[in-house]
Image 1 (cartoon, rainbow, N blue to C red):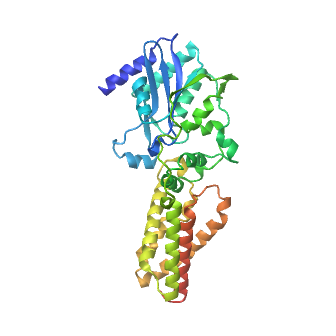
Image 2 (cartoon, one colour):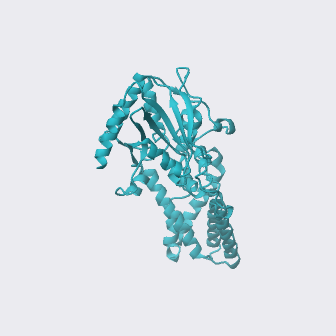
Image 3 (cartoon, rainbow, N blue to C red):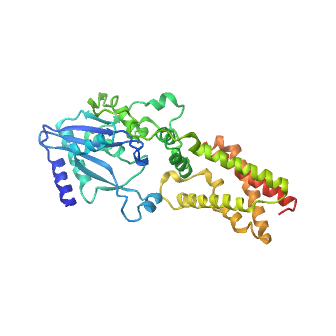
Length: 387
């Protein structure tokens, strides 16, 4: 039944009356789910007989090994067509702002776009390898319209260009993730320097909300791309987004509390001349597990933005040496050697971070300082032969 419906919709898209068809670029503002925070885009084609919208942002959480394949970089999204009214009502009832831009296209360009969309909807073509910043639900339809027009679409600078000296993928993510700091904490942990270079206005359009602000000033061969714009669901831009996370629950606050606890334990250990092995074990077990995750992302995942990741100097599987050997006196030389190397890497990274081509989450600083404190404590007690 699903395939039958898809084929019918494909037929409608490919063969609507050419002279009457109108093309619209649809932008939907953020929702409250983490995969909705930059919004969503689609193409709508309407005439007197049909009103169809095509989206390139569909995926199935229930597909086999979805999470593993997503982390690995095998992010398979698909193209799907829907009837416009239920599609629009779904987002409107969710409290999300919906904006429709009427694209200036003649009948031949519209026919070419319909042909391209019809090809995208074919079962053999509808699934594609999604790329979060370079090939997604906003960039795909924009390129299709560009191909149909036969010329490049020039997008104007964004608000980010006027408020930031350097606009990067990560900076845009941080802006739209500001109410979801733990999500951004995870992104800053997993994604390396591949999202930290300066990007042009066209690259900034990876975020549908940014693209929406650009379309009004977009041009093709010196002419405006958009004939007119209509807001069909007039909600505030961040209406569906959850409120700010309380400051005491943010990663920055939690990580500074971890640092304070670590510092207290280190001072206590130095005074009594004994090491709290349990705390060292817990801290470096978590660090080692994070290091294993980064190892997977850097060396196994095909996500292009996960490598290089300079956090690997701090979080790597070698941290597991501590919980594995800290309980064995005969193996303390291994922990001692690791802590010498670890201390040197942490200090080097801290001193050179400003010049590294990767932006760090502010919550990483207290964790790095905590690691330095633990390293110093172990080395000092080892030197005094108290371990």
